[in-house]
Each structure stands twice: as structure tokens, then as C-alpha cells.
Amino acid sequence: MPAQTTHDQLPGPAEKVRIRPALEALPAYVPGKPAADDGTRRFKASSNESPFPPVDAVRDAAVTALAGSNRYPDMAALDLREALGAQHGVDPSQIAVSTGSVAVSGDLVRAVVGEGDEVVYAWRSFEAYPILVGSHGGVSVQVPLTDTFEHDLEAMAAAITERTRLIVLCTPNNPTGPSLSTEQIEEFLDRVPEDVVVAIDEAYREFHDPATVVGTAGIFRRHGNVVLLRTFSKLQGLAGLRIGYAVAHPRLARALSQVTVPFGSSLPAQVAALASLRGEVQEELAERAEWIRDERSRVTAALAEQGWQLPVSQGNFVFFPVGEGSGAFAAFADERGLVLRAYGNDGVRATIAEQQANDLLIEIAGAWRRR
Image 1 (cartoon, rainbow, N blue to C red):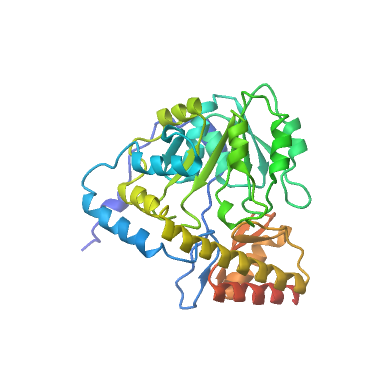
Image 2: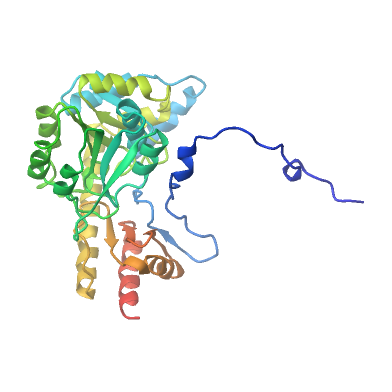
């Protein structure tokens, strides 16, 4: 008898739908490569995830919230916004919550960028920026990083035109690691028109040296065109629940609430984020952040002894500027049990992960140099 044809094998109808031409030019977002299941133990250090699971109290709160998953979550996320407002010293209405800071970034583009308007950001930086801008009809103005893989604020200021609506500063910068100082940002803002929004993306703020971290609270109070972007995905270990937020001035905050996806942040995510703000949880998270900073210092010191000259990272990752050897370096690491993230011909990023993974990174980096 002939083999039975499944529905998956049936030819589909011809598609004649119209897709926006702008999508053809968009790059695809490439997530961190998962560890292959081939019998070899591999550590995943490709996605800047926390090596720690959620704090027990946070996990328990999320699990308990699942009992109410038959109901829609609070679309306003009022309890969370009240807590975050108190933390940041702003009215709760100035907190915009969505599914991670990347989603808030998308809301920001929708709120301020029209067809053909320009968005200025450093490059290389967060891979989602060109996708978010282009998918909403905006034009990306990518300003190359300096030779030390830092923001070139002079060039970014010079790139501002009458069509500029949004500027994004990622600090610490993902994937290269360097951060901006309070003074650098203040001097830059003096050159930005007051009607141009400046978003400071602080997804990795908690991993920064506390003594030199950017004073964005003061910057926000002094500048009506500044918006702060934060996430619970990194230090808090809630990447899988997808929740982040913006701190914005009232008019922009209202605009963000108009364009965000209704009911975007789930009930477990809201409850988990709220639980992560408790005092005892904050203490445990601070200890975890210190551990990651210490591990980062240990790793970078060992790599320096091997002869590596890496950008100074304030994130939970380090960046290897291996240029055209990026793909080969990532493959070399993968063969030896460590999954890293290659960025074209720019370099390779390695997350500060479990201690064993960090030890393996040092070993692999040394072996690469000895080839």
C-alpha cells in the first residue's frame, strides 16, 4: 500500500498576501546558541543569563500566582508600578511595564518614531535595536564604536539631524562591555535637542562597579527628554518570565501606555518581579552581583596574563575582539564544551556563568592563543 500522506506533507495554497517591503531588509535576531545534546557536557555562556535560579521567595511567589492563570493579569501592573515608583522616586504613572526591556524599547520606537524618522545608536550594540527601528518604519543611524569598543559620543552628537527622534545609549554596552560615566552622558545631553528622546538602556546596571555606576537618577531628574530602561531578566534571573520597565517623564509615559501590548506582562512575571524588590531578596541579589563581579575580575585577570587585551567590561560578560576569527573561536570553544556568542566578524561574547564554565573559558582562551 502507498504511504499515507500526512497533513504536513500536503502542498499549501499559493500565498498572495502583501508583506511590508521594509521587512526584507531587516536582520534576523539571533539568540544565544543552546548547548548541543550530543553526550558532551556543555556550558551555555551565550545569552548573558544569570547562572543562578530565581531566589526561592521569588520562585514561590510565581508558582503561587499560577493558580490564578485562568484570569487576565492586571493590565496596569499597578502593584509593581507602585513599588518601582517608590524605588525610583517617581509617580507610579511614570513606570511603563512590558515583557522585558527589549519590549519597552519597541514601545518607545512606536511612541516617538514615525516613517522615515531616525534613531541614533552605537554599533555594535544590542542586536534588537536595528530590528525594532526598521520594523516600525524608522531609519537606523549606526555610529561605530571607538577603537576601545566604547560609545563615540562626539560622533553620535554629530549624527543628530532634524529627522532624529530617538537616541539609545546602552551602558554597559552589550556585547562589548564598556560603560559611560555620568559626566560623559551629561556633556552629551547638552548637545541633544530637548525634543529628541534619549533612552539609557541599563539592562546590565547591577553588574557595574557600584563606586562608578552612572548616576541616572539624577540625570533623569535634570533632563525632560531622558528615559531609563531596566529589566528583571539578568541579575534577578527572570529571563524566562519576560518582564522589564521604563522610567519616563509623564507625557512619554502616557504614550508608552498607549502603544504597549495589552496584558503583555503575565501575572507570574508581575508577582515575581514584585517579590524580587523585597528587602531580603535584594540582599541576596546584591551578594550574587558581587560574586559575578568578582568572577569577572578573576576571569579578566587570567585572560590578561595569557596576553589577551579585552575591552573593560562592566557587564556580566567579556568580549573577545577576534575579528574575522570570531566564528572559528566560537566553534573552537563549542568543541571543548563551552557555547559562546559570535557577532559576525566583530568578536565573541562570553557570559560570566558558573565557576566551572568560567574556568573552562580561561582554559579555552589559553588554548586558542597557543595554537
